[in-house]
Structure formats: C-alpha cells, structure tokens
Amino acid sequence: MQPSEVTELHYLLPSNPSPYSAYLTMTQNNTPTFQFNRFTNPQNSQISPNQVQEFSLSSNSTSDEADEQQLSLINERKQRRMISNRESARRSRMRKQKHLDELWSQVVWLRNENHQLIDKLNHVSESHDRVLEENAQLKEETSELRQMLSDMQLSSPFASFRDLEDIP
Image 1 (cartoon, one colour):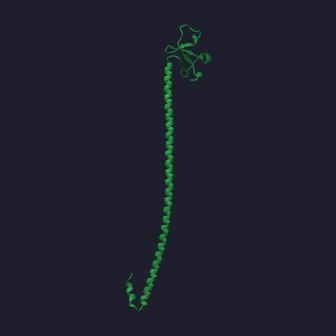
Image 2 (cartoon, helix red, strand yellow; image 1 turned 90 degrees about the horizontal axis):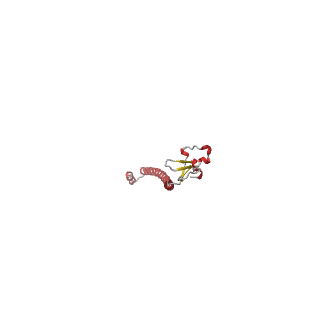
Image 3 (tube, one colour; image 1 turned 90 degrees about the vertical axis):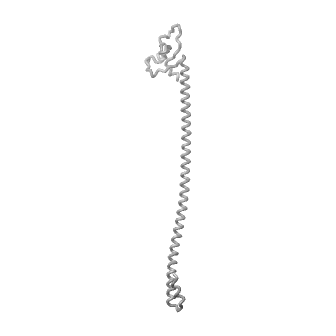
C-alpha cells in the first residue's frame, strides 16, 4: 500500500478529548478512525466505499499479516506454476525438435534408399533390355543355323545328317 493511498487511520481513542475530534469517526467495531481525506481533499469529503482503504494499527494488524502471508503464498505458487509451465513448454519444444530431427533423418534415409532402388531398377531394366536383344539375336542365329542345317541335309549325300532332323 502506497502512503498516498492511506485514507483512514485506526487508533485507540484517548480518554481526554482532542482538538481534532471533529475529524474522528467511529467504525462498526467501535474503533475510532482518523480520516485524512478531510485534510488532503476538502472539496471531495465524500468517498465511495470502493475507494476507502484502511491502514490499521490495532489488532487487525495480525489479520493483515495473515493476508500478506496468504498473498505471498499465492504469489509463490503462481511463480512456481509459471516456472513449471515454462519448463514444461521448453521440454515440449525439445521433444518437438527431436521428433522433427528424427523425421528429417528418416526423410534423408528414405530418399537415399529411393535413389538406390531407382539405380537398381535402371540397372535391371538395362540388363533386361540387353537380355531381350541377346535373346532376339540368339533366336535369329538359331533360325539361320536351322535353315543352314536344313539346306545341308537336302543337299547332302550322307544319311547321317538326316538323323539330325529329330533334334529340336
């Protein structure tokens, strides 16, 4: 509470009357209250209840201390919760970053494997094309050789070549 916020002061009323008694009022608990606002703001002597703040020097000080301790405890809990939330958010960001790094590592690995598979596929495709060409050449040679053999058998005076006809 700032000194400029003090508007009333509770204290025990002395037995002899004071020259300031015109500025003293009694609160509900019969504790006299000294109102500063009559000195500081004579034009605004009427104050709404939500503007009145009291500074007590009587038995209410233990209540204020308890309130301050409770506020301090609440603030401490808020502070701990805020720190805990920040730490949790930091751990969450770290987990997210780790997951992202793992995903990127997996992307790199899969791309590498994909390139290797594409290379193998190209190699197998080229080999297949070569085998098809070779197979076509061999079939052509086989056909030519059969034709040659057939021509030889017809023109050959030997009967042994005719026995080769049975060979596929």
